[in-house]
Image (cartoon, helix red, strand yellow):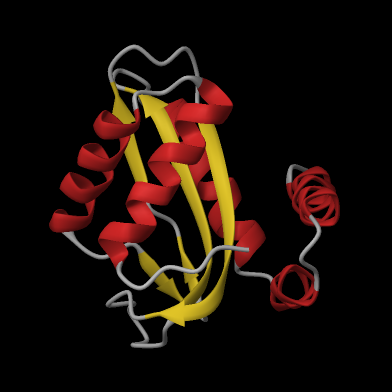
Length: 140
């Protein structure tokens, strides 16, 4: 569970986590997320944000999930603050692969039951299980 006070701080946290987990350059990740966000907010409603960015040198699409301790104003489409954030990082030239991953995450986090489970748990293993279990049922 993360405590962020601004979108920029959130993106910095996401960049640091991506760097630690996947070896992505943290500064490049933050810059790419901010660049994408400038095109239009990635808050999709119901407390969910799906920031995403394409980064040179990545092998495949990767993701970072955060549940925020305190909901953050994200300029979401429904003007609701965000507390569930799933960031996707994709290779610069990943056309359809990036879009498929984004669609899958979007479908998963549109499910109120899944979001309720994510909000009710704070243990990383449980959050991972909820997200991967959902992915299995959404893929069909």
